[in-house]
Image (cartoon, rainbow, N blue to C red):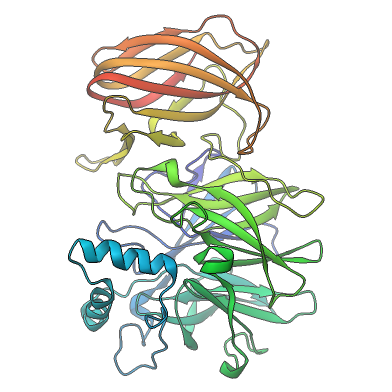
Length: 469
């Protein structure tokens, strides 16, 4: 087990990438996070899961391997029962767009998927997004593989290890589990179309004839994948990766009076599109912990779709049950950065124009920094605090290369997407030489500010850290 102390985004050590985060407060009062584990450069996820846990959102435990795909006997096994996932005979509008896009580039996406399936016996036994729940003294981990199979394994401990795997009679990805107030458990899964069914009392089986298809769909709810279910104030909240903004980088939600629908689309909770130029998907959950609601999600890094990093933001559920959309932040579940704090370059929460969080694996120590800084690109860090007790005097940049940085400070009346802009401070510009530069702030009103850096005349510039002084 590894421990780590941090309350900012990304949450975990920078070499540990846990996407597809499903958070649950378990009977011991701790928050446990179940997700995939990105440790490959060629594909999403890996052959293993690692559970993450905290009692206070400051001190984190990253546990040893919870489950290994190589221990699942039916994964990539041609003789095992196979239940198809995507229905290629009924492509959704989103899939039709992908097919047309790839056709123009000489790619047959359906044929590509089929070929990958034929090669699956030689492929790694990848484990995609899981979910977990406590029932009758045991913990049940629901998982899926790259071959569209799904299953469940059990443990006496929330962190695992999980054993006794059982294949479930369904196909697809991204399982979710939910137990209602009356003790009935429900199972959800699917991509493009979601499915749901009541679990039997053993938590390891269900009646296929009871499956309800199309609980939420792409056409009606912008559903893509990543099911997650919660009950709040008597209403059922179906949270999922949605394509409201064109690709599945958002977490949307739909509501119902029943765990099996019908569900009404309500909107977007969160969008991670600006975390990296290559950002392609999102998958997360919402959870109430220590008196506050949070959204858990991931951010891509490295200029690729992989290397997705666990992040969290505070959210609010209004009296009418709606959830206002919030922005990505650098501070995460912690407080805004103050004078004498150091903001790391990899804590950037939005990038525009080409820059992104780069990885350096050349040395003995893994490093991440804000790199690929090209002409006109910009980076956003949220939020920094300027108060009478700790007034901000300026910033010091440490990194590499040379160029010019133009600095803006923007104050809003909250972190909601539609928060009112109160004021913008055009701080000025300063030069970076040999990776170093200092800018003194003018006098400006106290408050919490979004820090935006715009880059011009960059020559090999990268940012390792920003010191507030």
